[in-house]
Length: 436
Ligand code: AMP
Ligand code: GLY
Figure (cartoon, protein in one colour):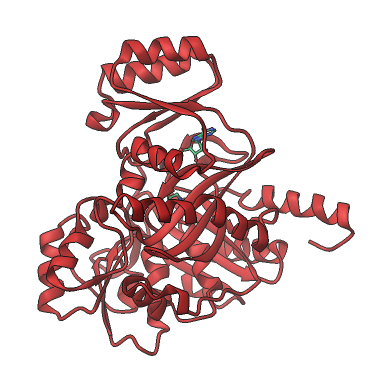
């Protein structure tokens, strides 16, 4: 098969690595890709949201399957354009991608399908939004309705904070049109985890679960980022609970999407809170997470490519998708200064040293080659060092040994990836008298 992968992050490097293990893959292109994806195929200089450019390339190269990484091309209609061109695309139509693109769309689907989620209201009018938070009190959550690149959510501890968010988003257009209307919802407490599944419109097949570490600082402090690390699976979210969450939060969504005439085909990423009352949906994303994919995909034991084809053909019920019971820990190395302006241009050495360690892989994101041919840091999130091992503790040790093998003067990373999950595993072990 001839495959076009779309994206340029660590997620796409991990996808390229998984796809390239398939005996049915002939040729892999990645648009625009990065030095990591170039290890498995050919990078082509087409931007992720250049839908006509991607489709023209796919037609010219007789591509059999397009695999979208990020949400932007999907929201921009990549799957729709592929459909018209007769090319299979393992992602949702623009309408179905509204599950991620519009908070109010996804909340309305949840309500219609009876999916547990925080109670919410949508506002177009700032004065009404202000009055609502004053009436409801804090903590409360204010969300830009549209896509805001991870910056659209304010978890407000006080009414003043919530009102400041409303003022910024609705009155000062801090997020452009994305914040012209807001969703205000009840604050949920619990452990936050992410659930991943492949969906073919009617059938959802579990991939697994992960826990992201979104803040820049250790102990979950400081600014929000794209994600500084992930563990898979979170120790307190076992396979049976994951299946239960899939029944509760994903399968009813698929039925509702069919009912409203926009079946969902693609990767669903359900962000959820494990509350004392059970799992509650925080949001849907219509793609793999980054860095969650880097933690999940190395655990895959079966061929990803036929499963993605089955997703496009509506035949997921017959697909073989199995994952090892190993744990994995993914640590992101970012350029100093991230999530502000990162330091760029300094050389990265030692990836081969890290990858020589048992179970360790290094995925590249914002890397580049300088004029002298040295690999350098070239943006915010630059590398993900991932280790898989039979226990979470061993995976964590191996991941940090991998990080230590990398010599890159501008690197910053969190030293506590997996600590929370490990603590939960140790608590459970104490309770049940088993080893973590
Ligand atoms: P989202 O973009 O919807 O994933 O929101 C970003 C982050 O805000 C989530 O990952 C949660 O940590 C937090 N968050 C969103 N909604 C809620 C909620 N209703 N209660 C508590 N935290 C939330
Ligand atoms: N790591 C969170 C995301 O990919 O949206």
